[in-house]
Amino acid sequence: MPAPSHVLSPLTATKFRLPRFGLGGSPIGDLPSPDGDAAATATIDAAYQAGIRYFDTAPRYGRGRSEERFGTALGRRPRGDYLLSTKVGRTVDGTADFSADGIRSSLAESRDRLGLDVDLVFLHDPGEHWQQAIAEAYPVLHELRAERSIAGIGVAADDWQLLDRFVRDTELDAVLLAGQYSLLDRSATPLLDRCQAKGVLAIASGVLSRQVLQIDRSKQATDPGVILARRISAVCERYGVSLPQAALAFPGRHSAVSSVLIGAASQAEIRADAALVRQSVPADLWRDEELLRLLA
Image 1: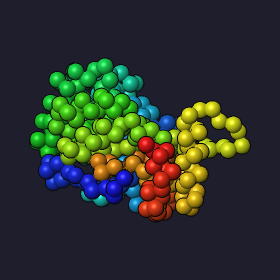
Image 2 (image 1 turned 60 degrees about the vertical axis):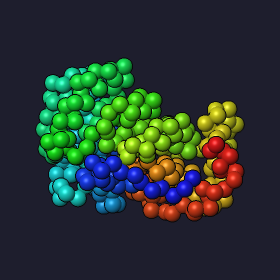
Image 3 (image 1 turned 180 degrees about the vertical axis):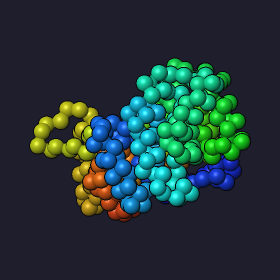
Image 4 (image 1 turned 120 degrees about the vertical axis):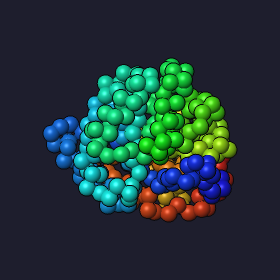
Protein backbone atom coordinates (compact mmCIF):
# COMPACT_ATOMS: atom_id res chain seq x y z
CA MET A 1 0.00 0.00 0.00
CA PRO A 2 2.00 3.01 -1.21
CA ALA A 3 1.60 6.47 0.21
CA PRO A 4 -1.21 8.35 -1.54
CA SER A 5 -0.47 10.54 -4.52
CA HIS A 6 -3.78 12.09 -5.47
CA VAL A 7 -4.63 12.35 -9.13
CA LEU A 8 -6.96 15.21 -9.99
CA SER A 9 -8.76 15.84 -13.23
CA PRO A 10 -7.88 19.23 -14.78
CA LEU A 11 -11.44 20.39 -14.09
CA THR A 12 -11.36 19.40 -10.44
CA ALA A 13 -7.83 20.57 -9.79
CA THR A 14 -8.68 24.12 -10.82
CA LYS A 15 -11.67 24.34 -8.49
CA PHE A 16 -11.10 22.62 -5.19
CA ARG A 17 -9.06 20.09 -3.25
CA LEU A 18 -10.99 18.28 -0.57
CA PRO A 19 -9.57 18.32 2.97
CA ARG A 20 -8.46 14.94 4.34
CA PHE A 21 -11.36 14.81 6.79
CA GLY A 22 -14.86 16.22 6.89
CA LEU A 23 -17.94 16.27 9.12
CA GLY A 24 -20.91 14.25 7.90
CA GLY A 25 -24.34 15.76 8.49
CA SER A 26 -26.62 12.79 9.16
CA PRO A 27 -26.13 12.72 12.97
CA ILE A 28 -26.48 16.51 13.03
CA GLY A 29 -29.91 16.22 11.47
CA ASP A 30 -31.01 13.45 13.82
CA LEU A 31 -30.45 15.47 17.01
CA PRO A 32 -33.94 16.03 18.46
CA SER A 33 -35.29 19.58 18.69
CA PRO A 34 -35.28 21.99 20.41
CA ASP A 35 -32.08 21.20 22.32
CA GLY A 36 -30.68 19.60 19.18
CA ASP A 37 -30.25 22.97 17.52
CA ALA A 38 -27.79 24.16 20.16
CA ALA A 39 -26.04 20.77 20.28
CA ALA A 40 -25.64 20.81 16.50
CA THR A 41 -24.13 24.29 16.50
CA ALA A 42 -21.75 23.31 19.29
CA THR A 43 -20.69 20.17 17.41
CA ILE A 44 -20.07 22.02 14.15
CA ASP A 45 -18.18 24.75 16.03
CA ALA A 46 -16.03 22.11 17.73
CA ALA A 47 -15.29 20.51 14.36
CA TYR A 48 -14.27 23.87 12.94
CA GLN A 49 -12.06 24.61 15.93
CA ALA A 50 -10.44 21.20 15.45
CA GLY A 51 -9.44 22.19 11.93
CA ILE A 52 -12.17 20.47 9.90
CA ARG A 53 -13.00 22.49 6.81
CA TYR A 54 -15.27 20.18 4.83
CA PHE A 55 -18.93 19.72 5.74
CA ASP A 56 -21.47 17.44 4.04
CA THR A 57 -25.23 17.43 4.43
CA ALA A 58 -28.44 16.48 2.59
CA PRO A 59 -32.15 17.37 2.57
CA ARG A 60 -33.22 13.99 3.95
CA TYR A 61 -30.93 14.24 6.99
CA GLY A 62 -33.39 15.14 9.71
CA ARG A 63 -35.97 16.23 7.11
CA GLY A 64 -34.03 19.40 6.33
CA ARG A 65 -32.80 20.11 9.86
CA SER A 66 -29.22 19.16 9.03
CA GLU A 67 -29.00 21.78 6.28
CA GLU A 68 -30.62 24.42 8.49
CA ARG A 69 -28.22 23.68 11.33
CA PHE A 70 -25.14 23.74 9.13
CA GLY A 71 -26.32 27.02 7.68
CA THR A 72 -26.72 28.53 11.14
CA ALA A 73 -23.31 27.38 12.38
CA LEU A 74 -21.31 28.00 9.20
CA GLY A 75 -23.00 31.26 8.32
CA ARG A 76 -20.77 32.99 10.89
CA ARG A 77 -17.60 31.69 9.25
CA PRO A 78 -15.74 33.20 6.27
CA ARG A 79 -17.30 31.45 3.28
CA GLY A 80 -14.00 31.00 1.50
CA ASP A 81 -12.47 29.05 4.38
CA TYR A 82 -14.43 25.81 4.03
CA LEU A 83 -16.08 23.48 1.51
CA LEU A 84 -19.75 22.57 1.70
CA SER A 85 -21.60 19.79 -0.09
CA THR A 86 -25.23 18.74 -0.21
CA LYS A 87 -27.30 16.31 -2.22
CA VAL A 88 -30.20 16.24 -4.66
CA GLY A 89 -32.54 13.55 -5.91
CA ARG A 90 -34.04 12.66 -2.52
CA THR A 91 -36.54 15.01 -0.91
CA VAL A 92 -36.77 15.79 2.80
CA ASP A 93 -39.01 12.74 3.29
CA GLY A 94 -36.71 10.50 1.26
CA THR A 95 -38.88 10.39 -1.87
CA ALA A 96 -36.87 9.93 -5.07
CA ASP A 97 -37.08 12.70 -7.67
CA PHE A 98 -34.34 12.66 -10.28
CA SER A 99 -36.24 14.68 -12.86
CA ALA A 100 -34.58 17.82 -14.21
CA ASP A 101 -37.16 20.07 -12.53
CA GLY A 102 -36.85 18.09 -9.30
CA ILE A 103 -33.08 18.59 -9.22
CA ARG A 104 -33.36 22.35 -9.77
CA SER A 105 -36.08 22.64 -7.13
CA SER A 106 -34.15 20.52 -4.62
CA LEU A 107 -30.98 22.57 -4.97
CA ALA A 108 -32.90 25.84 -4.64
CA GLU A 109 -34.60 24.60 -1.47
CA SER A 110 -31.28 23.41 -0.04
CA ARG A 111 -29.74 26.81 -0.65
CA ASP A 112 -32.69 28.43 1.11
CA ARG A 113 -32.32 26.16 4.14
CA LEU A 114 -28.56 26.65 4.26
CA GLY A 115 -28.55 30.33 3.44
CA LEU A 116 -25.23 29.56 1.75
CA ASP A 117 -23.86 28.68 -1.65
CA VAL A 118 -22.84 25.06 -2.15
CA ASP A 119 -19.50 23.91 -3.56
CA LEU A 120 -20.20 20.27 -4.37
CA VAL A 121 -23.56 18.66 -5.21
CA PHE A 122 -24.15 14.90 -5.13
CA LEU A 123 -26.91 12.86 -6.71
CA HIS A 124 -28.18 11.09 -3.61
CA ASP A 125 -28.53 7.31 -3.83
CA PRO A 126 -29.97 6.97 -7.36
CA GLY A 127 -30.38 3.20 -6.91
CA GLU A 128 -33.02 1.85 -9.27
CA HIS A 129 -33.47 5.37 -10.66
CA TRP A 130 -29.94 5.44 -12.10
CA GLN A 131 -31.09 5.66 -15.71
CA GLN A 132 -33.23 8.74 -15.03
CA ALA A 133 -30.42 10.20 -12.94
CA ILE A 134 -28.01 9.91 -15.86
CA ALA A 135 -30.51 11.07 -18.49
CA GLU A 136 -32.19 13.95 -16.60
CA ALA A 137 -30.49 14.82 -13.31
CA TYR A 138 -26.85 14.66 -14.35
CA PRO A 139 -27.23 17.10 -17.29
CA VAL A 140 -28.68 19.73 -14.93
CA LEU A 141 -25.67 19.49 -12.62
CA HIS A 142 -23.32 19.42 -15.59
CA GLU A 143 -24.87 22.67 -16.80
CA LEU A 144 -24.64 24.31 -13.36
CA ARG A 145 -20.98 23.33 -13.14
CA ALA A 146 -20.29 24.77 -16.59
CA GLU A 147 -21.97 28.01 -15.47
CA ARG A 148 -19.81 27.93 -12.29
CA SER A 149 -22.93 28.00 -10.15
CA ILE A 150 -21.41 25.03 -8.35
CA ALA A 151 -17.78 23.94 -8.23
CA GLY A 152 -18.25 20.21 -8.66
CA ILE A 153 -20.71 17.35 -9.05
CA GLY A 154 -20.77 13.80 -7.79
CA VAL A 155 -22.84 10.80 -6.77
CA ALA A 156 -23.33 9.47 -3.23
CA ALA A 157 -24.36 5.87 -2.53
CA ASP A 158 -23.59 2.75 -0.51
CA ASP A 159 -23.28 0.64 -3.67
CA TRP A 160 -19.81 0.81 -5.21
CA GLN A 161 -20.95 -0.81 -8.46
CA LEU A 162 -23.58 1.89 -8.95
CA LEU A 163 -20.96 4.56 -8.39
CA ASP A 164 -18.64 2.78 -10.78
CA ARG A 165 -21.27 3.04 -13.51
CA PHE A 166 -21.47 6.81 -13.06
CA VAL A 167 -17.69 7.20 -13.01
CA ARG A 168 -17.51 5.20 -16.22
CA ASP A 169 -20.38 6.91 -18.08
CA THR A 170 -20.35 10.54 -16.88
CA GLU A 171 -17.87 13.29 -16.03
CA LEU A 172 -17.90 13.45 -12.25
CA ASP A 173 -15.65 15.35 -9.91
CA ALA A 174 -16.26 13.12 -6.91
CA VAL A 175 -18.03 10.10 -5.49
CA LEU A 176 -19.13 9.66 -1.88
CA LEU A 177 -19.04 6.01 -0.85
CA ALA A 178 -20.85 4.95 2.33
CA GLY A 179 -19.07 1.82 3.53
CA GLN A 180 -17.43 -0.84 1.32
CA TYR A 181 -13.92 0.60 1.68
CA SER A 182 -12.52 0.31 5.16
CA LEU A 183 -10.27 -1.85 7.30
CA LEU A 184 -13.04 -4.45 7.43
CA ASP A 185 -14.41 -4.23 3.88
CA ARG A 186 -12.39 -3.41 0.78
CA SER A 187 -14.91 -4.58 -1.81
CA ALA A 188 -14.97 -1.14 -3.47
CA THR A 189 -11.31 -1.29 -4.54
CA PRO A 190 -12.26 -1.60 -8.26
CA LEU A 191 -14.27 1.62 -7.99
CA LEU A 192 -11.36 3.46 -6.39
CA ASP A 193 -8.98 2.18 -9.03
CA ARG A 194 -11.28 3.55 -11.74
CA CYS A 195 -11.56 6.87 -9.87
CA GLN A 196 -7.79 7.10 -9.75
CA ALA A 197 -7.50 6.39 -13.47
CA LYS A 198 -10.13 9.01 -14.35
CA GLY A 199 -9.09 11.69 -11.86
CA VAL A 200 -12.29 11.46 -9.81
CA LEU A 201 -12.02 12.27 -6.10
CA ALA A 202 -13.36 9.60 -3.73
CA ILE A 203 -14.82 10.39 -0.32
CA ALA A 204 -15.16 7.53 2.17
CA SER A 205 -17.73 7.46 4.96
CA GLY A 206 -18.88 4.89 7.47
CA VAL A 207 -15.36 3.80 8.39
CA LEU A 208 -16.05 3.93 12.15
CA SER A 209 -18.48 1.02 12.18
CA ARG A 210 -19.91 -0.69 15.24
CA GLN A 211 -17.32 -3.48 14.92
CA VAL A 212 -14.54 -0.89 15.02
CA LEU A 213 -15.88 1.11 17.94
CA GLN A 214 -17.22 -1.67 20.16
CA ILE A 215 -14.63 -4.43 20.45
CA ASP A 216 -15.37 -6.67 23.42
CA ARG A 217 -12.84 -9.47 23.76
CA SER A 218 -14.61 -10.84 26.83
CA LYS A 219 -17.33 -12.39 24.65
CA GLN A 220 -16.95 -15.21 22.16
CA ALA A 221 -17.36 -13.90 18.62
CA THR A 222 -18.99 -15.71 15.72
CA ASP A 223 -19.56 -12.75 13.41
CA PRO A 224 -16.79 -12.68 10.75
CA GLY A 225 -16.60 -8.87 10.91
CA VAL A 226 -16.08 -8.91 14.67
CA ILE A 227 -13.43 -11.64 14.41
CA LEU A 228 -11.58 -9.69 11.70
CA ALA A 229 -11.79 -6.50 13.76
CA ARG A 230 -10.27 -8.25 16.76
CA ARG A 231 -7.40 -9.66 14.73
CA ILE A 232 -6.62 -6.32 13.10
CA SER A 233 -6.88 -4.58 16.46
CA ALA A 234 -4.33 -6.96 17.95
CA VAL A 235 -1.86 -6.10 15.20
CA CYS A 236 -2.49 -2.36 15.61
CA GLU A 237 -1.90 -2.53 19.35
CA ARG A 238 1.63 -3.82 18.78
CA TYR A 239 2.37 -0.47 17.14
CA GLY A 240 0.59 1.62 19.77
CA VAL A 241 -2.35 2.32 17.45
CA SER A 242 -6.02 1.90 18.34
CA LEU A 243 -8.42 0.29 15.88
CA PRO A 244 -10.48 3.50 15.39
CA GLN A 245 -7.26 5.45 14.74
CA ALA A 246 -6.22 2.94 12.07
CA ALA A 247 -9.73 2.86 10.62
CA LEU A 248 -9.70 6.62 10.08
CA ALA A 249 -6.26 6.53 8.49
CA PHE A 250 -6.74 3.48 6.27
CA PRO A 251 -8.95 4.81 3.42
CA GLY A 252 -6.44 7.54 2.56
CA ARG A 253 -3.89 4.84 1.78
CA HIS A 254 -5.62 4.48 -1.58
CA SER A 255 -4.55 7.35 -3.80
CA ALA A 256 -8.10 7.98 -5.05
CA VAL A 257 -9.44 8.71 -1.56
CA SER A 258 -9.19 12.42 -0.96
CA SER A 259 -11.35 12.73 2.15
CA VAL A 260 -12.92 10.70 4.96
CA LEU A 261 -16.23 11.81 6.46
CA ILE A 262 -16.71 11.52 10.21
CA GLY A 263 -20.18 11.45 11.71
CA ALA A 264 -20.58 13.09 15.12
CA ALA A 265 -23.46 14.35 17.23
CA SER A 266 -21.64 16.04 20.11
CA GLN A 267 -18.63 18.22 20.88
CA ALA A 268 -17.00 15.38 22.79
CA GLU A 269 -17.42 12.94 19.91
CA ILE A 270 -15.93 15.15 17.21
CA ARG A 271 -13.08 16.25 19.48
CA ALA A 272 -12.23 12.63 20.22
CA ASP A 273 -12.29 11.76 16.52
CA ALA A 274 -10.19 14.81 15.64
CA ALA A 275 -7.64 13.77 18.26
CA LEU A 276 -7.39 10.35 16.59
CA VAL A 277 -6.86 12.02 13.22
CA ARG A 278 -3.98 14.10 14.59
CA GLN A 279 -2.13 11.02 15.88
CA SER A 280 0.25 9.64 13.29
CA VAL A 281 0.12 5.98 12.33
CA PRO A 282 3.57 4.36 12.02
CA ALA A 283 4.39 3.41 8.46
CA ASP A 284 5.59 0.05 9.70
CA LEU A 285 2.03 -0.89 10.63
CA TRP A 286 0.93 -0.78 7.00
CA ARG A 287 3.89 -3.01 6.08
CA ASP A 288 3.20 -5.58 8.79
CA GLU A 289 2.96 -9.01 7.15
CA GLU A 290 0.12 -10.19 9.39
CA LEU A 291 -1.91 -7.07 8.69
CA LEU A 292 -1.30 -7.45 4.96
CA ARG A 293 -2.62 -11.00 5.12
CA LEU A 294 -5.72 -9.85 7.00
CA LEU A 295 -6.35 -7.12 4.43
CA ALA A 296 -5.75 -9.36 1.42
